[in-house]
Image 1 (tube, rainbow, N blue to C red):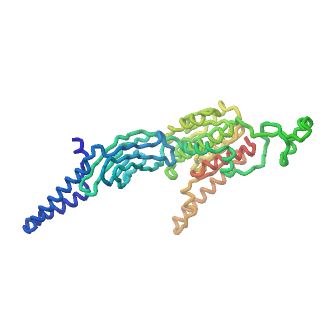
Image 2 (cartoon, rainbow, N blue to C red):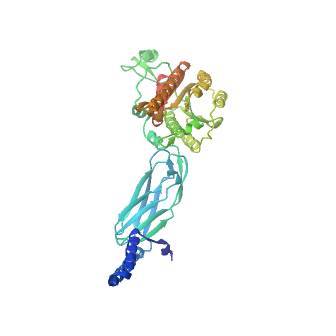
Image 3 (tube, helix red, strand yellow):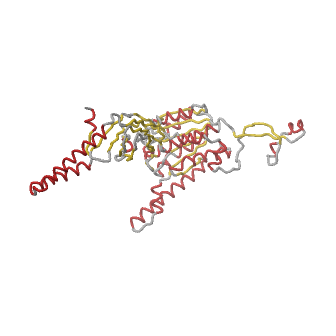
Length: 443
C-alpha cells in the first residue's frame, strides 16, 4: 500500500470538484439537470480512474541521482547536477524540488519540465555559499502529472548528504593553471625600477644588448674571449605571513560575504602566488589572543594545510589586540619577513591606537596593512543630497573617508605599506602589491 502515500490531488481536481458540488446544489432547485450532473460525475470518476492508471501503472517511475562535489568553494558558483530517467510510457509533466541546505534560505526552489516517453535528461544549477561550514542537502521530490491532471504522484528520493564549504579554492585552481610569468601579465604588473639590490646569482650567460653592463663577468669574458654577464634572479625562500584579524569588525558583510571571508580567500590566493614564487608562506590568525599559527614553509602541502586551518575559523566578536601578535613575532619569527595584515579599521582612533605596535614591527619586518573600503559609505559620497539630512550624511561620509585615506598614507613615513581596497578587489590588489614589493627588492 506504499502507493497510497504517493497520491495527491491537483488544483484541477479541486476546481472540478467545486464545480460538481455547485451542480449538485442546483439539481435540488432544477431537477431537469439531474441527468447531466450524473453524467458529469461519472465522467469525472472515469477520468480519475484513467489518471490513476497512467500514474501508477509504472512501479518505479524514475531513476534519480544527484551529483556534486564533496566540498564547495565559498563565495563561488558550485555546480550541482540531477540525472533522471523516466520509465513512463507516456508524456508527463513533472515538478522537481530539491531540498537545499538551510543556509541558502530558498523556499521556492523548483524546476518544471515536460518529460517524453522513456526520456533521460539532467537538471543543472549552481549554488553560491557565503558561509563556511557543513551544508546538509535533503531529499529530492518529484511531483508527476499526466495530461488529465486530476491526480498527482509524489516520489521521494533519499539523496541526503553533507557538503563541507571551504574557503574559495576555485581561485586557487585558476592560479595553478597559470605560470608565474603569465600571472604577472594577467594582473597587469609593470616593470618597476629597483630601489634596492635583492638578487641571487643564477648563472653566467652570453651578453646580449640590453643586459646591465655592471653585471659583466670579466674573468669569464677573458676565458671565453667574448662578453659574458652574470644573470640574477629574485631572492627566494623569503618569509611571508598572512595575518588575519578575527575581531568583530571583520564580520561586516559585503555582497553576502563577510570581510573575514574576503580576507581568508585573499590569504589563500596570495599564498598560492608566494609559493609559486619559491617564497615561504605562513599564517597567523588572532583577535584578543593568537587563534592559530602555521609556520612559514614552501612545502607542497602548505596550501592544503592553510585551507584546512582556515576552514573552521570564526570570529568570537571580541575586540582585537595586536599585543599578543607582536609578542609572538618577536619571540618566534627571527628572519625579516613580509607581514600582510588583513584588518578592518572602522574608526581612526582604533588605527591610531595600534600605530605604536605597527611602528615597532616595521623596524625588523616589512609590514603591509590591507584595509577595506566601506563601499556603502562611498555610495553616500556619490549620492545626490536633496535635503539637510542628506547633506549631513554626505559630509560625514566624505570626512570619514578623507581622514582614513590620509592616515593610511601617512603610515608610509614609518615604513609601513598600505593597501586600501574594496572587498571584491582585495585578491588581485594584494597579489599586485606583493609582486610590486618583490620587484622593488624591498623585502
